[in-house]
Image (cartoon, rainbow, N blue to C red):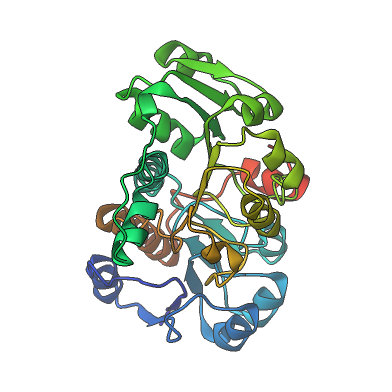
Length: 328
């Protein structure tokens, strides 16, 4: 009987439908017993007896695959692939699939919510109210600012559609493949990253983590932004250097930041000491509908594979190029 290791958590908590699919297919499965993100060493001890891993952001490295002698498929719940060593998988004949469309609406809506929260200092007011402090804080509206979006893939484009109804003053965008279609549909201006840093009032990042994007935003880039600018990261931890962000904000630069993803998770770092820094626990995709769709698509892919059917969401060559050549 085929066996599946489900490393991502939660899984099936709010909707058991994906688990029901496995049970109906008579496939044995084990859900991560640690109930938190697994380390490489924890995975090494667990993987030897499984044919498929339904994975989250855990480090499925060459070391892990060396121990996973039966492994034939990594079915990723979500879009990010920085946790999976794609070339090591290919060299071992291990297929990799993902669910790139499923999380986009939820992540984009969280980014929008973070924009509105930062602009009106909702997080600061909430914190002070819980301390018994009554203070009415001035803020800004999305209509009167310049928004910068770096990365115009599925999530960046969905965010663009979310903010369209606010009639934002201007949207600056940066991507390796500027789209004429998006330029025609939206009030959009394609610019370099450097120009975007300098001119945007609020910046939202929607990029994969690669050798080129790791620590892409450091002290130099942060200081090139307006002193009252705000930055949001719902993409991947490690793109913004967290120490530099902390130091710059402690020094009084930037009026706000909202960070949902961190280089090391769970996060326990110093950004939590900064009142105007909004932190969330990697919850971008955690709307019930999007999470259920992600889990279901990853599960269906695993079942198809074990039945000898073609994969529908196999990771394309372009993703291998991004990971190993740093193409952005």
